[in-house]
Length: 236
Length: 88
Image (cartoon, rainbow over all chains, first blue to last red; front, side, top):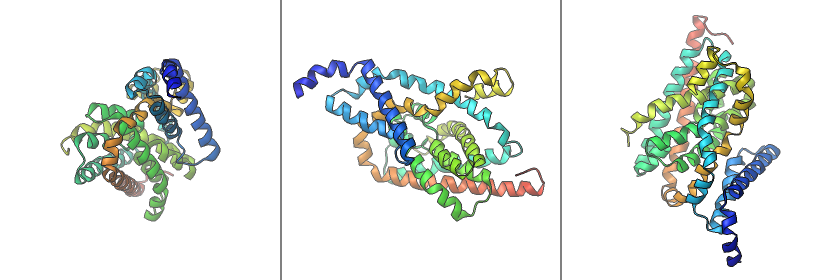
């Protein structure tokens, strides 16, 4: 068994094989998620659950995997740029509320960053961990590039973003109901700015306007957080 | 992202030309995170060591963000309504 693995290792660690495996796992994840509609079954999580054990069993180093699949990492940049189009599409919903939307997301961004950094610090987290936690409420491509810049670990940040999205998507609607929030814009903004795409998925279930606003909040939150993160370093 | 937005907004680029590419890329963005996310395996020790800090921090901070954003927006909208700038 081990000998066989050893012989197959060059094949397994090839670029073509790894990329196919990633794509295949991801498509399987998308299929499962669409079929079951279970929030926890995110395609990204499913892909991780397939790839990590695979790398462990075959003994392929993470470093090798990262190099071979670097094209995916490279595409993160263009995908953030593409968000500009999403923002443009939703601009109609915003007219007349620009100032209140910018203010509330700004305040939310400050509260989110400060609270997570201070709580982590109180638990004795080190600098790397705090820097990785700070951009947790932003959509992953932005969060990863922010983590890279402020000395965090992109891999940790990617995981924190998913955890944050799952949690916010789960409790968000309950909190909003408890607070007695009536404004559809307020509901959408709260979901999108706290839990990015996963929050937006839940906001879509509340209604079209909530969903659109939530999508917009992802973009604004990304920009606000990018501007605020450099100041967060004072807290570390 | 901001440049693309501004270019579309001021009609420098025709939205039709970017729509299909932008939609496919943003809808399936998660696949581009795979290399970074798999990197979590390299950090297992840090995560298990700081498990409580991570979970409590994320949970409380997420709740606080939802509450502040929703309350600030609703308050400001109500105040705006008196000056009838807001429509619903």
